[in-house]
Image (tube, rainbow, N blue to C red; front, side, top):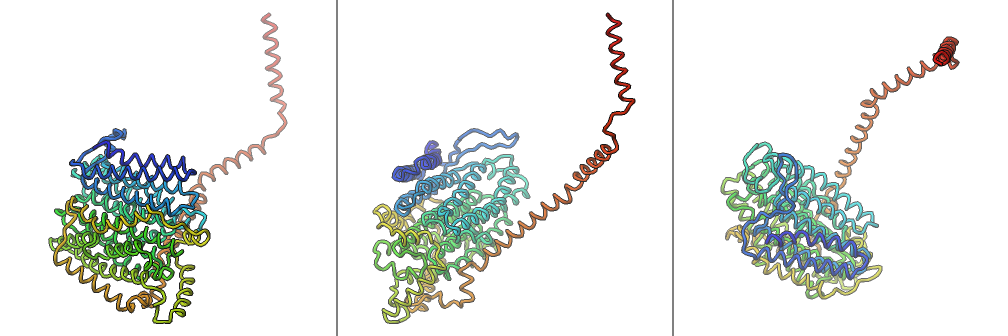
Length: 637
């Protein structure tokens, strides 16, 4: 089993290196990316189904760092096996889909290689039994996300989004580094088992766990680090599917799940996590309801769903373990990858990602229509899809935590979860009605008039609110080939996994724990929200979001000015940096420079006081020395 775990990490890293070398040969680059991803998926399946317990796998030996033990071990157990398989399966689907989606992109080879490296970073994090390896995988994904988001680097919007993601997550990663250092110093080891089992300084433990929460908040897009994720939609759709589904933004859930025994005993860190998760899930769901672009709606949905995963880890009692959070991570990987790839397919058909431009475009698409329908239903939590079981497992875990002494923290999570259930069902219903209701039915107008109105609306929205300008330019300028069978099959398989994927969770401890009353209440809330949206939209003839006042909706579409706040913080930091430079140059360095100035002035004064012509006494002295030397030599002879 140890060789399987090692190859899970090594193979995608090798694929990335080979992919860069053969990047100009598109067919070969695609073959390497897809074949390697398929091999990694098989290895992940082997690790998951193989009857083994927990294995501590030696890799490179220990780093010589004095009395700090750094074993660099990998760690294999049923949880890491299941998550590795799901990650590998999603990455395989994305690689197959990308081969069609970026068919005319001359940098496809570089993109596919970056996806492989991204997968290597995630799999390293999943298999890591050492905090140093966790950090290495964490940072690899951060760097790769910058490359993928900024793939269309000739576009200023893509470059800005990439740098924004990089800077925001790097700032939050300061907390992650501090947290890992604190946890390691506490036990004098970076070994994960040692960190989990050792006793030590409680203050260092709290600092470490809070630091990890801050790092996770950055990568997972929790408030106040959330605004980079919607802007990440400037990258190609497969990049959005990769980042949002089962890798980077979900990595924080996995890290905290690994450290769950420590969090279960630390109220300060769990309370911080609960507050951030509760605020994020409700806020992001509200903003998703107002979005005018499909990809940005899905991005805000990701923020909300990641917060749901983390809320399970913040509220679940210790005896339940982290299974509820991991369960929703797996379910979310399937239906969110499905929705993003489906959105990419639909954007190629329509030449846009704005909801107004996509109005009614799903109706004639066959397999894509039912696939997107299943994805939105799973996201909303409709039974018997996987999203229903994973979401209600989280709700039941939070309720059990609240009723078993979880206090304010757990009840806050419970209330936020039920509010989010309503909002999620609302924006999923709205999206489905818009995508599946023909434009000609809009507003009860005659077909010809409605078509003119719709075209005008599309023209306005697609030029102002689209999140995928590069794809629109590609479609409008060059067209796009019909989807290939493998790419279409990927979407269909992901749709099927939203139905049968619940079976994956039976092997996960605490992965399926649905309470009857909480599930019934959840279903009623979903049905009530869907019916309300259906009624308010006049059976889909109007957009329910248009009922939101303009002075509220327009700021919501733009994220309530958080981007402006980021710019303000950046300018403040720059101003402070300039002040520090000025103080260092004009105040701190003034004393050494003043000493140099004084010495230079004294030298110049001495130079001016000394005559340039040698004195008569000096000449006489030199002549005498020469004469004595001559006499001495002569007398010696």
